[in-house]
Amino acid sequence: MDCDKARELNLNGLRGRLSSEAMAELREHLSTCSACRDHAEAERVLSEVLETRLVQHAAPLALKRRLSASWPTSTLAPRRIGRPAWAVARAMAAAASIALVVAGSTAIFVQQRSELRQLESETVNDHLRILEGAPLAQVAGGLHEVKPWFGGKLDFAPAVRFAGNDDFPLQGGAVEPFLDRRAAVFVYKRRLHTASLFVVRCDGLAFPTSVRTRIVRGFSVALWKTGDQGYALVSDLNLPELLELRGEIASR
Image (cartoon, rainbow, N blue to C red; front, side, top):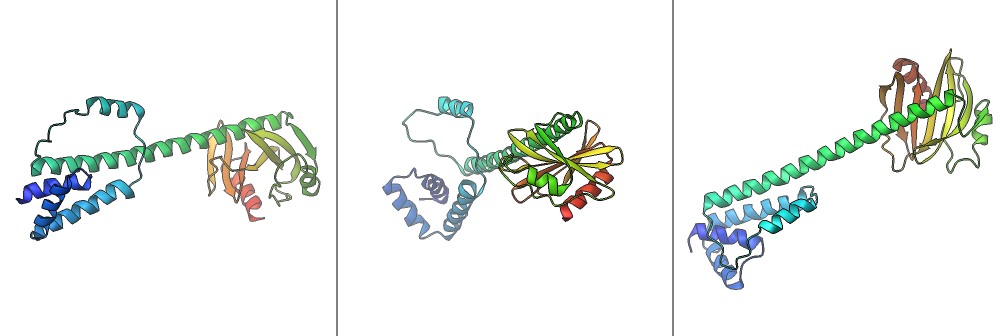
């Protein structure tokens, strides 16, 4: 057996396509040829990387059907593939795996960005309802009046300890629908401006672990999460002032 034939058989062996006789013949050649042994080991490692260590994504159903329709049905022995052909085949397999990883990462990034946009839009919409005086329920007063009032109206205890100060006095609280759940709302003032802080359970929502800010329809919005709770702060204040309020909330 020459080296080209041995390397072709080795590729088929990695895919489990060799008969016991052919496998025995291949082992005999590898026992006497160090170059082919090194080549076989390199192929094994490459196969392990491609098949087990890269992120794998299921092929679309349409692609599976096209491949199934074009797959050869002949039972004749496969044509011998020379070294240049199998080298190209391996390169194409590696490129396809990398393309799947990139495509999967891009899809995840696009989905996460879409979910963040949804959170930002919901925050502004709910803030507008608060300004119109139309929340599900509301109460006036400071932190010692607001936090006990949430009892029985929410399925969690909002972890907010900022009771307001001279720059950002706390006006009261409310309960407001937020996407598929209820939010605790803390309403702060800054001169003639109103700032709404929405606190929700963050499971299933794309709240970022570090603060994210953005201007949405003219409103300043800050999103972040701590533990199992997500925070959405919104106001027509400029971003530096909103982040000053956020700093007070987070530091407590």
